[in-house]
Image (tube, rainbow, N blue to C red):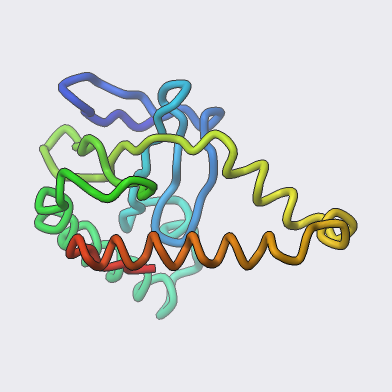
Length: 154
């Protein structure tokens, strides 16, 4: 198991606490309301486990570049963000002091909302104004993020 330092404390990443995974990172629950996003490096099984070849080499190179980028980018992230935007709280470092990820609050209802919207039968019963309201709120959040100088990278 991997260990990282978060807020001066050692955190051991337990695969059983994984909330999800994506192309660039894995996300773990480290407290009831705190998630830890850990960026993949070139040694991560999702990359190192690929057959040797150009795809693995490219993913390993991209992972190294991302880790290097995060050393400057994450410490410079604004400390105050508009309400409704989830942002990094504390940096997670490895034993050598390299930034490997960050903590963020868990949005308790996010998974449930995603699952509900994936249910085709439920979608048929939703008020047609509901998606419009969601997109209006998303527009407000993006506008407030841009006004605060934030750039959305995904």
